[in-house]
Length: 294
Image (cartoon, rainbow, N blue to C red; front, side, top):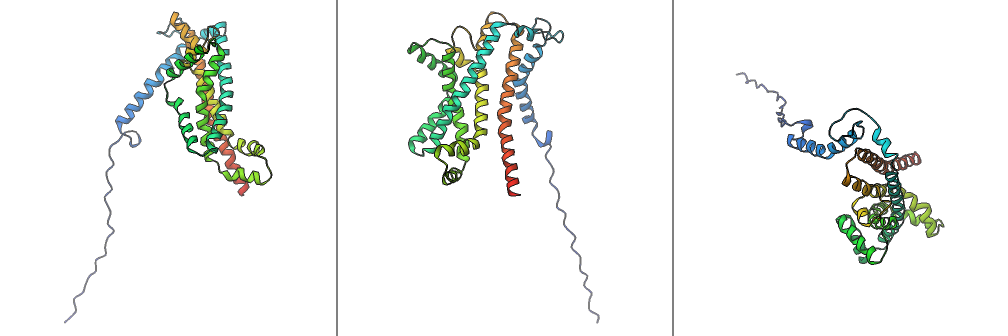
């Protein structure tokens, strides 16, 4: 009797069914999220676009655009009051930037080097101006100066802006100091550097990107600041944001659109530099490390 033949079936590879992709719009994002994002950017940037467009309007109108013209920019650069306010704003921003850089950097070093409960409390208090409504700071500064009998002028604006901006510098510079290793400064001390030389030759070059970024950020914030400057400014010359507010209370001129466009361009350029320069320093450091490793 012949033995039965057994046929062996070859297992075929099992193909798992691919899950169906859920129908979503732009690159898999929900339609409602895309709609809300588009609405947000429209509400945020459409008024700015309107201001920029009507700053080039040849007609003295804020509702109908006739033709392209630089008429209102010419009027702005020939208006002595607006130019004096522009110079005042640049002066205030520059002095406030330098003053807040010096004081904020010293505060950041103190908070980072002194590791105690008192330093932690002071570090927390440093963040208070960042979350306090600016109108509260403005009223407090006004009461402080009038209580001391100090006449409101550009000096009071500069002092108030420096006080308000110290926190921004301290937070940014302290973050950079916290990311640094203590071994670098200790190595410089072991090689014969004094504490001052280690600070000047090692620490300051390493935190230079943070110093530049925080300084440019403070310049942009102070240049555009209205609330604090409104409470502590004198009669003349007024900072440019306060001057614009005074002008539009009397009459709305298309020249204000030109002023606003120029202020926006200055702020965007400064903030762009504050974001770009630290990245350039980071790339330079990385390239140096690669060369040293090669």
